[in-house]
Image (cartoon, rainbow, N blue to C red; front, side, top):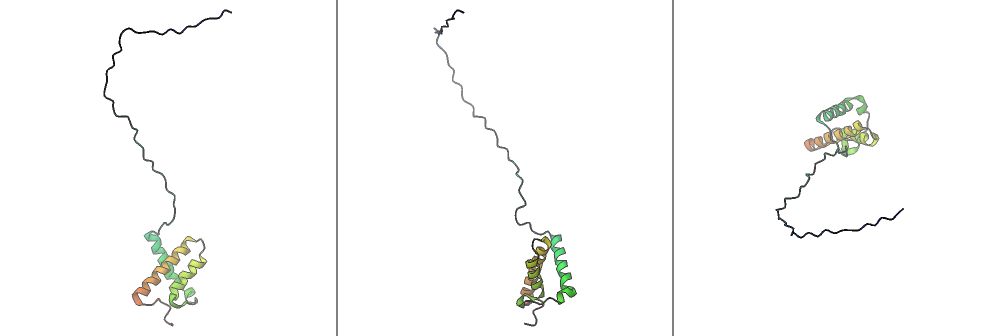
Length: 124
């Protein structure tokens, strides 16, 4: 086969090039879309008003029952504070036991600030 020869030919224009300056437009910027990321349950999660009412009612039932009369009270904690401490210590990972302990702490704090003592610590 015969070799082909290639030559680069440069075309030279005799007429001058005319350039017209136009104003530049602003660059097109894509607007950032806001993503709604889902948040995990995280910490905390407070009680709803219904859960607080049910927990308080449960604490009231425990205090009025014969079960609570057999529980020895711990000094200034009183009967309700002792029940709350027991629920906190023995409740483990039970959600309702922890909420019961919180309700007992709230009731004991309220009684202490109202009367100066918590019910069940009259013998001290």
